[in-house]
Amino acid sequence: MAGPQETWDEKAGKLEERLGVRFRDRGLLRTAMTHSSYRNEAGGAGEDNERLEFLGDAVVGFVVGDFLFRRKRPVLSEGQLTRTRAELVREESLAAAARRMGLGEALLLGRGESGGGGRGKPSILASAFEAVVGAVYLDQGIRVAFRFVRRQLDLPDLAARSLDDGRDPKTRLQEWVQKSGPGVPEYTVTGVEGPPHDRLFAVELRVGGELLGTGRGKSKKAAEQEAARVALLRAFSGPEMGK
Image (cartoon, rainbow, N blue to C red):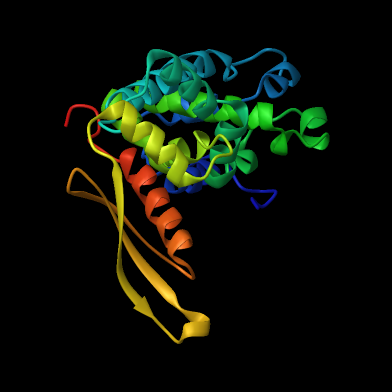
């Protein structure tokens, strides 16, 4: 936690380290961290983060849309793309990223909002995340902003998990493979270790001869599910914009 005498520049330096971004214009970062309650208590002086939040929301939507569109497998329909994008940019996802980045402790809040637990409110944290994205975009450009959003949201993992509709990985993989191209998932046991009462199975998953995932488990079924889960995660790993 920041000490009571810590200056904004000291806070900003620590925040930049957590973000992995050195701002050319550190004023943008301060604006991104300025909640409207702080500005109101200052008599309306300066600017709060609402305009940067608006811009960051557009950038996050673009980055996530680009990320999903570029996936080679599974191929998602327009409706699936829309639903998945909405899931990835929901308040809970953005707030979780903001917590990992430590945005709450760096926020400039009014006394009332701060005393009321504002540093931990999902709505305030999600807005701060979007504002920071907007600031990164203005300061560093779209390519840096793209990498920033992808890294901070951990999009491959988040996308794979967000599409979990309650079905097991094998079932989801089967459906997506059928939609995205020829071939069916083929699971092959490549090894069995340990005594009969405590065996560990190793499985490879291939589609059309291509190795998509491997898994290990206490049973053949568990190993197959793990291989399918790995394949689903890899399905959302691929080239970034412009590569």
